[in-house]
Image (cartoon, rainbow, N blue to C red; front, side):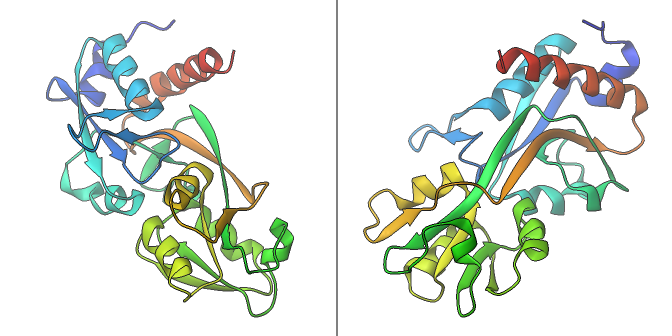
Length: 226
């Protein structure tokens, strides 16, 4: 294990505490207790593990969507962000190697004759998807015949489908399964149209921190993958 230098600590925790942005919409990696508001799951675990390694406190900063995290880039609200890799933001953000890889798929109404991923991409099919989600850019390249309908966030996309305004909703498998609980007439399609790399992102211009995060996430991924 590489020993963090003073430069690494200064770049990641300039105020002595690592402010870690968490995407609460990502049910695969973030679980929020509805009563206490306490955050658990792999995203918070890796942030706390990083803080422990650096000898720094960690403050979890909760955002309702990944888009909210991105919108706060210039507001000095977070030091690291637990978000999906987004090459279009590489001019502003450094993305570590993945600490987790999650899958994106569709939820569909059971009256829709779709049994496979390819079935969803059909003429006349309307797919709701969150405008700022990492998997949406993949859909924009992938979909040839269906129509994409943009929503503000994953839960809104699911609501469009349930309300009959769309035929399918794209999303992270775990999130779709959570939304589908107690919703009759909805099922989640087998398979995945995208595998999404979840990373630790920091603003560009912190080379020591970037090198340490590269080493750190490789070690973490190896640990959780055993």
